[in-house]
Length: 379
Image (tube, rainbow, N blue to C red):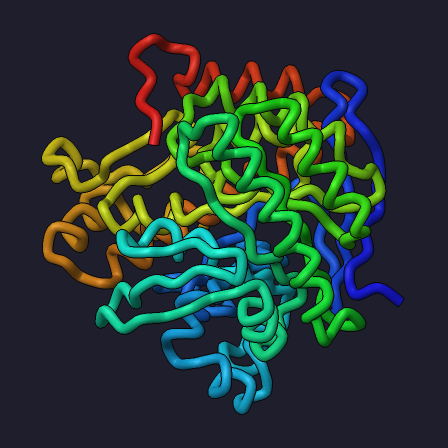
């Protein structure tokens, strides 16, 4: 039996978006789904009980950061990531590749792996496909990711071709090193930047290796939204219908809807938790910066159309006061609300697919959220 199973429930007649169900050793969740990010085995300021309360079925943790602190050996000794953090739902860990390429200025890519420096103390480190897989095997997450190269945007076709071919070779090595295929599903990552032929090559190579799921990497790295949507339009149809498709690092409301319309099943992003720490929240009327002076005497909820416990119990004025005074409770409230907002949005997306009206839902949401205005503020 495979560790990860995907079931396609239905397709939206209006858009072709997929309603599905993913089963892992720690539970089942419906897709399209947004995964809150718990980089260091915690979704910042949120307890596991609160994550359940808002409907999170799967969260993401980070291989690179957990390798450095506390170390995968300590997590393994604790009984694995689920026991260590007291979360009994599904967990996906990324391979650490993105962090190696984004946090380290000094790095050397070789066929064997990547030499780089620890962003915390400058120590020399080396991460290879085998090492990244071994760390994730020790962490015990349900879904683990192949170690890939994350090329910058923009990159030349020549560089991207070399990168895609290396990513495929590394993916094969990850498969060989994977010691727990019975209870951890290893996903391959399709690369290729904005180049259709390279995306085709990457998808074909990885599909031949028969992974239980596929991620689309190298997007949301600085390219315009229309480029991301165009790449998704020609990439997702290349991937198997009977396996989950995961778009890495995407979490703005417009991109979640547009990604689902283009056949994506899973998303993750630090966006909702990161902006919450700056006092920015997502509401049904668009972005709201609650720390701004105009909310000092505003005793209405963050979002009058939201039924989360933050909006039921606390006012903009109170939350502004907490954020301005650097009170942790303020960040807890904005984080809870933002994650609730995105998880509720995905629930609405799934319902719209059931009703074959995701295209209409997109229009209504974009209009209400202000994405259609020329002065629209994005995140």
